[in-house]
Length: 138
Image 1 (cartoon, rainbow, N blue to C red):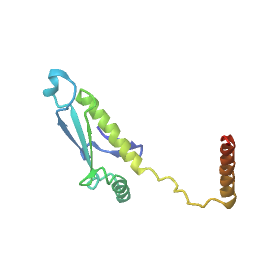
Image 2: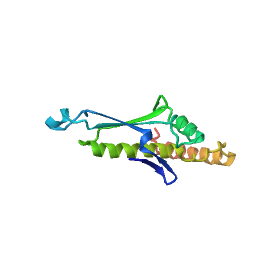
Image 3: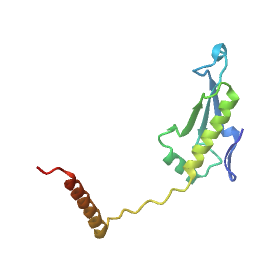
Image 4: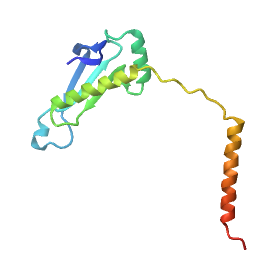
């Protein structure tokens, strides 16, 4: 199964490494015999499909999720291996797709204007006066 990131970027299945193991959790007697847990491993550094810029961007954005420049996703949500494989493909493709998106514009830090500061202080004073007038006077 090839990994489709976008119409122009498809990672071939030969660059993906699969590992299967026994899953924990529910499943009855059969759970101890079948390897339904799936791990998909994609080595970013050795990829021939990604260019150098894409590799740098992915490594920079996913630095907390990488192990030896490889993305490793483990899935054991379903009871059978095929559904877990499909889930792993979806998760790793969305992870790579989101890391390659252009970053949103960074907000330029501005100082509140004097007029807005005065409006805020006036509203606070009015609110305080309102509460002060509600109090009982002895």
